[in-house]
Length: 130
Image 1 (cartoon, helix red, strand yellow):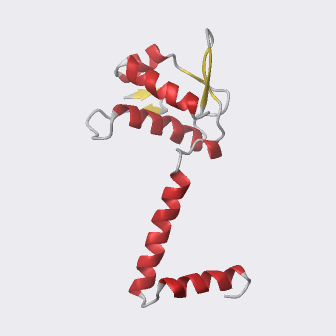
Image 2 (cartoon, rainbow, N blue to C red):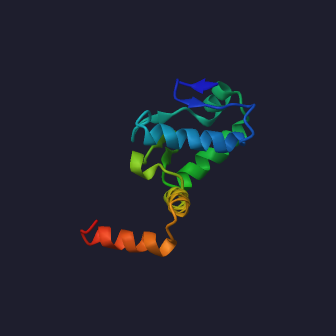
Image 3 (tube, one colour):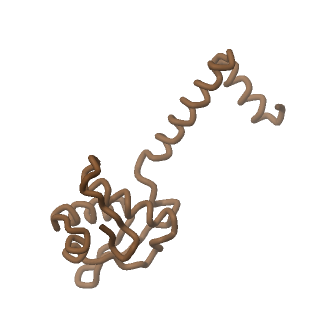
């Protein structure tokens, strides 16, 4: 199901609907499909469009507002407030770093290198040597 071709929710996905919706809004902002100032549908309209409970949509809107991703103007509507760089979920950067480091250390171990070898190599690279 989609909202204006931008947001999709899959009821067969094991991910909770609220998480799918929040991730969808953040992803649409991060990819430029939703831009700062764009107006979101009302909670009720979003719920109808996606065929989900209005309380679920209200929960997502409230969380996005607390995070500074959207801004709600009473009587006017909810608007995108975050730039693409600001739209990433909290701790997303740390998660990506952790995934990257795990991959690097796995590759290093496969090539017979230790963590200390990798750290020394990074330090040398940072100083301009390779």
